[in-house]
Length: 197
Image (cartoon, rainbow, N blue to C red; front, side, top):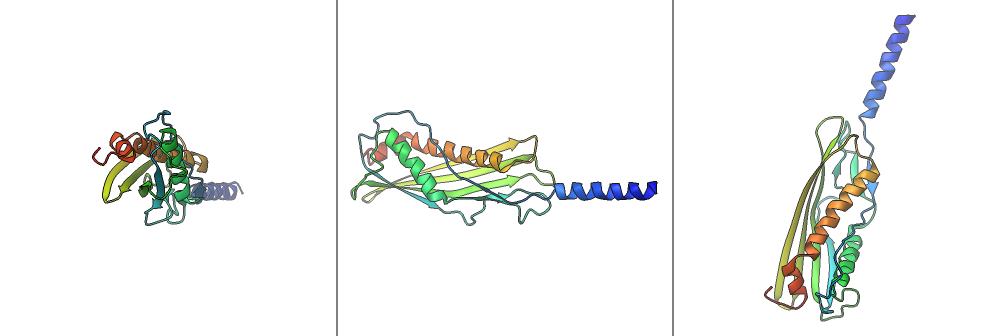
């Protein structure tokens, strides 16, 4: 009887350990923020902001684990308006007219080319790497100015990250990249009207 109970207990423990390695998919709210110091660098120059999601897949990546093909980390919302709104607010804080720009405005297209979520190999995930590439293309007449902003962050975690933690990590790397774009001196000069920043 003891042998049977021991076998049942071992089997149950094994089943629990296996199910513990199966990670469920997650949807996270993408809502970047950009902290910039208020300034009148734009002299009220109008800027029309357009956000584009150029990634091949909606998912950022897999959480890993046993069923990594289905344990995806995906956005719960459309990234384009979320990015555009953050860029507009940042530009407005810097003295540009980004909310009522009009037809003659400089166009700023902000493209999310890459946002990768890469877990460590294995059934237990305690390390995640995020890679991001943001491209900003400003156009005024026949003149164009392009800035590329790349980031890579490795997170060592005590536990496999929850949806809230993944949301925080994704929003953080995106926010920091938008801030770098907004603080790019050459991009600021071009948006303010200088064709040769």
